[in-house]
Length: 122
Image 1 (spheres, rainbow, N blue to C red):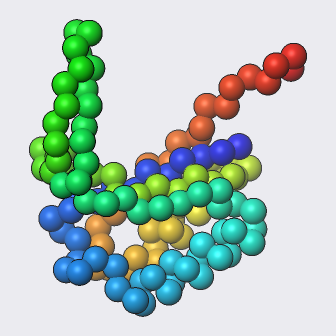
Image 2: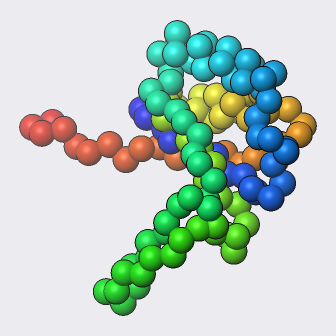
């Protein structure tokens, strides 16, 4: 089963200068471990919401808003797409993913199973 980890952060509460070298080293080790275990399918951080555009469909009309998206509080700062045998296993990986950030960060990981399409003829 595939699971998406959406990593949310408050852009105003992030450490100055973003992730430091020590965090990047710890994250690299975890990502290497996840890759070797066949768990990690894809992951990336996202640029600041100041560089984003949010589209909204309401009443058949699409509107666009340029970032930053301060009213949202937390914004999606990154994601990881993983393969795990259960929701519990996926949550365990998400806990480790968050844990490497230490106490200087406030992050939320939302873990949701990817809704796989039914196979043809199956």
